[in-house]
Length: 201
Image (cartoon, rainbow, N blue to C red; front, side):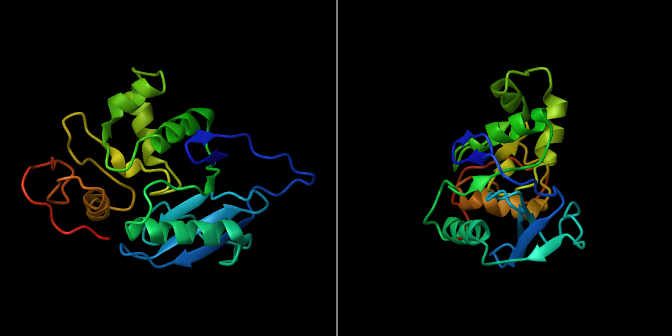
């Protein structure tokens, strides 16, 4: 479980919980509606997707709408505060599903601070796998908890905007919200000087 700045062991559970049982809440944000989801019984956020993302998991019989679940309510409140400029670092516990390698990448992403950007190569070095840039990029692209695990802070080695699962216009808006100077939603776009457009806060 990722909680705040570090990775913690998930708490022991007296009864097994099926791994495909999800509680979720759909919320409005300045960049469009999002789905927040938690695997039942974990007490941690396991997913955050914009509703038009291609990798949004389809609802099934094991998905239950539960917006009052404490972890989902906490995540929604923190996200509102983040968009409102009142919060820079999330405290809600996170438990993304993935391989050990993916989780190492996602843990390193959580450590990239608000307003910072780093390259895929730098992220690879931070996890001790400097030659695994392509695999690291794949893990970044598989991040299931948008914004809370801030994959939008990863850019190309030349500073180019590159990609984002929620779409480049959203990545542009998220980076502007954090004070970065990107001016257009093009994967080749680089930061410029001059005045910033108004942020999304």
